[in-house]
Length: 275
Image (cartoon, rainbow, N blue to C red; front, side):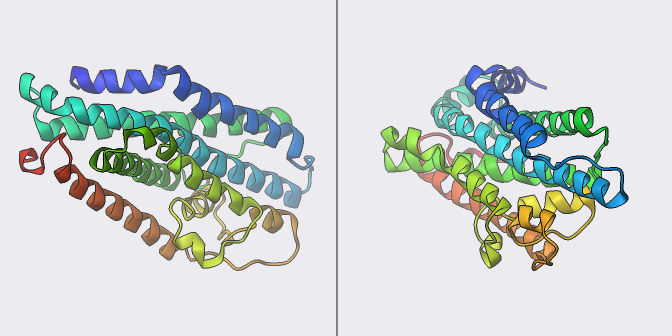
C-alpha cells in the first residue's frame, strides 16, 4: 500500500462533510425508520418475518443512499485529483496506471466502509428495539452488491468530474456533483413508487432489489416496497437477472465514457496508461 492509497482512504474517512452527509444525515433516517415508522414487533412467525423484511429493506435503501451521498464528495475529489495526476506520476515513482488503480481502490474501500456503517447501525438499532437479529441470508451476495454499487458510483463520479473538465464548465461542478445523490433518491422513491421497467434503465434503481433479495432471500417487486411489505396483494416481481445485467451495463457505460473523456482532458493521457 503506497502513501497515496493510505492518504486517499484517510481523507475520505476523516472528511467532516463526508461523515456528515454519508453517516450523520443517513443515521437520522435510520433512527426515524426503526423507532418511528417501523411496525410493532410480534411473536408470531409472520410478524418476525415482516420485521426482518422491513430491516432488510431499511439497510438496502439507506445504505445505497449513504453511498450516493459520499459520491458527491468523490466528484470533487476526482475533479481536483485529475489536475494533479500528471505531476504526481511525473515526479514520483507512482506510475499512471498504479495511480488510477489506487485512487479507485481507495475510494471504493472508503465507500464500502460508509455503507457497512449504515448496515450495521440498522441491524444494531433494530435489535435494540425488536430483539430480532436480522442478518443477511446471503452475506456474500450483499457484499458483491455493495461492491458493484461502489464501482458504479465511483465511475459515475469520475464521469461527472471529467465532463466538467472537458466542457470547461468548472462552475457547474457544485450542481453536477449532486447527480449521484439524485439517482440515489430516485432509487429511494421505489419505497412508494413502482417504476416498472424503468427500474432496469435508471442508474442505481436495480441495486435495492439485489440487496433485498440477498438480504431476505425473496424476490422483491419492481417498486412500491412498502406496499409490498404491508399489503396482502402480490406485486410484479423484478427480474433479478435483468437487474444484475443493468448494473453491469451501467458500470461498463460509465467506465467507457470516462476513458473517452479522459483522453480529451488535460489530466492523464490515455497513452500513458500501460500495463
